[in-house]
Length: 488
Image 1 (cartoon, helix red, strand yellow):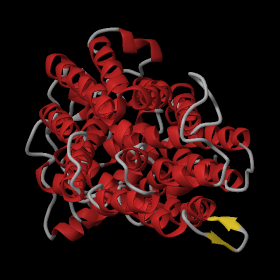
Image 2 (cartoon, rainbow, N blue to C red):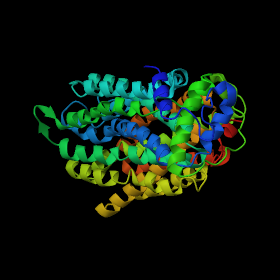
Image 3 (cartoon, rainbow, N blue to C red):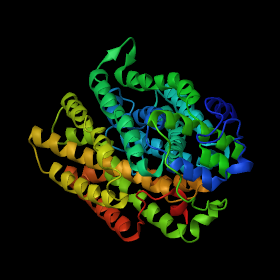
Image 4 (cartoon, helix red, strand yellow):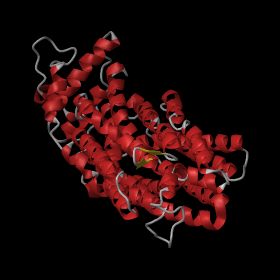
C-alpha cells in the first residue's frame, strides 16, 4: 500500500516552521505539540483555498467511487438485453437475475466495510485511499469482459470489497483533515462532486447501453469508461498529506506537527493575516480498541447506527438501483426509461450543492430526519402518478432528499467515534447497510413481482419511518463540536 512518510515530508517541506514561531524555532513535536494541541490548531483554521483543495482532491476519488457504485442500475437493462442476466430472479436467491448482480456488489461492500475497515486505522488514511481505488478499478475492468452471470457476479463482488474500503476511508479522511466549523460543508462538497458521477453514468448508459460498438456491448463501455479513474490515482495521492490526527494517535507527533505547520503557513498566507488562536484543546481519547464500541458512550451510538444503516439502505438503493426497472414496470420502454433516469439523475449532485450553503446551519440529525420524511412522501406519490412530468418531478424529489440525507449521515457517523477506531467503527456500522442491501435487492424484486411499483414504495416508506425514529430518539448533536469532545 505504501507509506505515508514520503507525503508527510513533501507536504512539510513547504513550511518547516509554524506561523508565529520565531525564525529558527524548532517544530519538534516533543517540545511544543501534543495530539490535543495539534487537533485544536487544525480546528481553528479558516476555510481558505488550501483547506478546500484537500476536500476537492478527496472528492475526486469519491467521484470515481460513486460512478462504479451506481452504474449498476443503469447497465442492468443492457445486461438483460444481452442475455447475461434476467430481469426477474429465479428462486428467492437466484444468481442469474439483476437482483443477484446487485446483491454481489453489496456482498462485496459488506466484506469491505466490516472486515477491512481496520486497514485505514492500521496503515493510514492516505495509503488505503489509494490502494482501494486501484483495487476496484482493476476488478471492474476484468468484469467488463465477462460472458457469464457467474463471472459478472464474482468480479462485481471483488470490486465491491475495494469500494467498501474506499467509502469508509474517504469519510474518515475528510472528518480528520478539516476544521470543525466546515465538516458538514466538506461532506456536502465531497458528495456534490461525487454525485456528478450519477448523471454521467446515467447519460453514458442512455447513449451506449442500447448500442453495440467495436465488438462490445454498450454496457461494457459504460464500465470501462469508469476505469479511467486509475489514471488520476497517483496524481491525487501526491497532493494529499496523511491525516495529522491519525499520525498523532500513532505516536508519530513530529510528522503530524510538520503537516499541521505546513498547512498553517499556507492558510495564513491565503487568509491575509494572523491565524486566530486555538481554543483550549480537548483531551484526545486514549487509543481505543474495536470492542470499546460496545462500552458507553459508544454503545448507544453503535446500536443507533446499525439500525439506521439497515433501513436507510432500503430507501436509498431501493430507488437508485431500481429506477430504470421501476419505470419499465410502469409501461415505459427501455430507451425512454433510461432517458427519464438520466433526467432524474441530474438532481443527484444538486442536493449536496444545496448542502454547501446549509450544511453547518442545522444539526445533522435534524436534516437526516427531514430528508427521510421527504423521500418517503415523494416515493409514495411516484408510485401513483402516470404523467411523465410528475414521474420526473417525484423522482427528482426522491433523489434530492436521499442525497441531502446521504452527506449528512456520512458526516454524522464519522464524527461519533475516536480517531484510533474511527475507520473500523464506521466500517462496522456502515457494513450493515451493505448487509441490508444484499437482501433488499431480492426483497424488492419479490415485492415488485407480487405487488407492483406501489408495493415497492410502501416497503421503502416503512423503512424511512424507522430511520426517522431511531435518529430522532437516539442521535446526539454534533454540529460545530470538536471531534475530540464528541468522542468523550
